[in-house]
Image (spheres, rainbow, N blue to C red):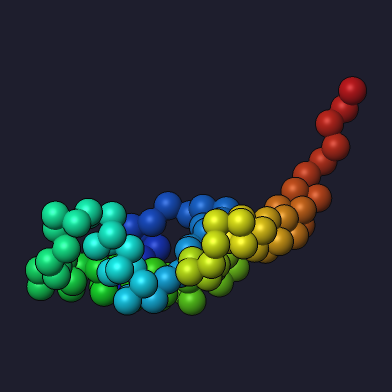
Amino acid sequence: MRRIVLTWFKETDFTIYLRIDYRTGIERLRNRQGKKRKSSLNIEDDYIFRESIRMYDFLSDFFQDRYIVINGTKSIKEIADEVWRKLFPSIKNKFTSFPKTVT
């Protein structure tokens, strides 16, 4: 599995993963679809959604040094604050090793 993951994904410095639980995701998806399509998702959509969550959970566990996992059920402001709090130290550490520019 590791070989497949490493060959399919280009290495990134950071990935911000807004983690939401299955029920919240389905509720948001239904609300986004509008009142006309309030019916339940079909089996294939449900399977794809569950597998997507499972895969992102796997990737965030496997690449813990590059994934910043954020609770996506919070308000937009709380999410933005948490992203900044978690991302800033990583950026600061990553770029302090660069040589200073010559003027």
